[in-house]
Image (cartoon, rainbow, N blue to C red; front, top):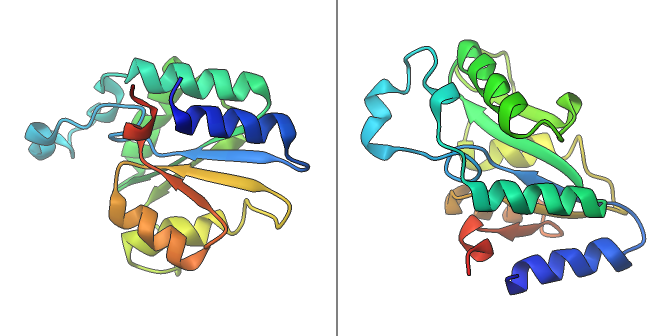
Length: 164
């Protein structure tokens, strides 16, 4: 168990209030094949992603210990959201559907921040209260830094921090 995982487990066991963990999907719990980015717009692309088993195991363990587990992910178009939901139902059946936040950036009427770096922070505000201990795990450092600049109380973590 890594120091990051130990720290989160300790918080789950001792903190008054809720521990919420928001996991990114692409590159965090599902593979992000950078060499296949031209196929990203193909229907079914997201459904065929390889699960990152170490992260999925840790997600499941932390969920079982009592953390509220969420997915917070981007996609470009609504049909990609459908692919992602199918993938999540297959590999993350323990996450309630209302804890899955997939933001279709190009086809939505979102009037929040247009920057990818700030958009997740805008969404987090709807799910986080002052009494919560919150972790965001994302492979995109600029997204993590954007969240931290908007919400300094949030703990940001790279998925690499879970690999021994």
